[in-house]
Length: 106
Picture (cartoon, rainbow, N blue to C red):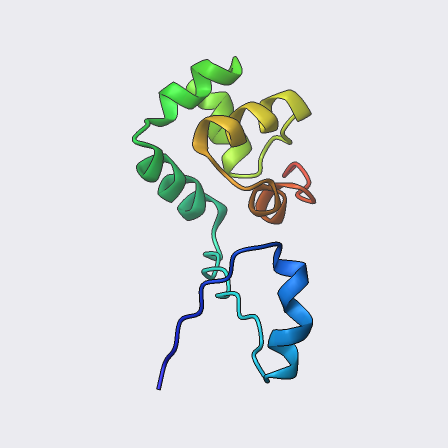
């Protein structure tokens, strides 16, 4: 049987009571990230209703420069990364997962 309880007040006030009743807070796991940064980037573009040219122009890059960054051939600068995240509505931790520790390819 599933039961929904609505409580008025601060969540911290009720946490000990709910824990005593055997209730545990559940948070759904985040969706899995794709293995490929290009796939991730394209999915963010689609979700935001944008084209790669829109992102490139907004962060001050030519489309080829954006492509080089997405494919890992050129590292992102901090302003470029922040602008891309903001425009795409991307979570910074996701962005860092794909591009934070990548080295420019020779």
